[in-house]
Image 1: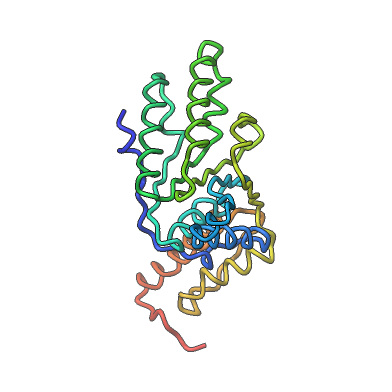
Image 2: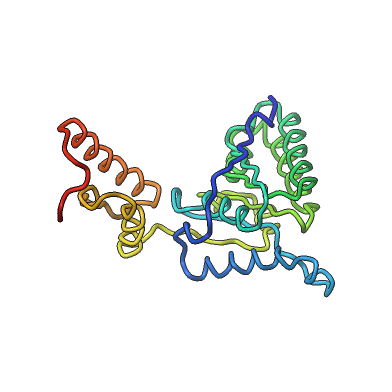
Length: 241
């Protein structure tokens, strides 16, 4: 398995303003960005730089988008690696490949985003005969995190922090929670999504008690249906209010 084939080198331009975040979370990310902006000045005073961050909580609530926004704001490339795709029966090979990716990210001073970190935690207890090898994989990951340089940024994401090895969790200087959006926040999100479309395409039935990702899929599905219907009926997209 060539791990480089599993890396997503994302070029999407996302700003922090594009991400719907709770105020406390946004403030923590702004502080993180400022620390890496003024890294040399802070290091001159012997101050540690937070560069190991765990994004934890509900799926579809903006963890990956946050990672892209931070990388874009800092003017850095981002390497995205989904750990659920790489844990194979050949654990030694997996460990070596992960090490190669960490080395590449550190060398390029890039943002490394490890998605579904809990997959390693799950795999450790999946089969007694694999526990020893999986423990060695976790130990390798812990060592890589410990020696990850301050001028590179490691972001990890999980929907299930409760099953991750506690030794791994202790390595993160920041652990930021993502919750399902309430109705008011979802309305703001819908308004933002729909604002770029003609007025007569914006009137959709909104769903609630869902994630941002689910709301986006729902809204775009209805808009596409409306648009296709108008195209089939040869109806103008822009009509008088």
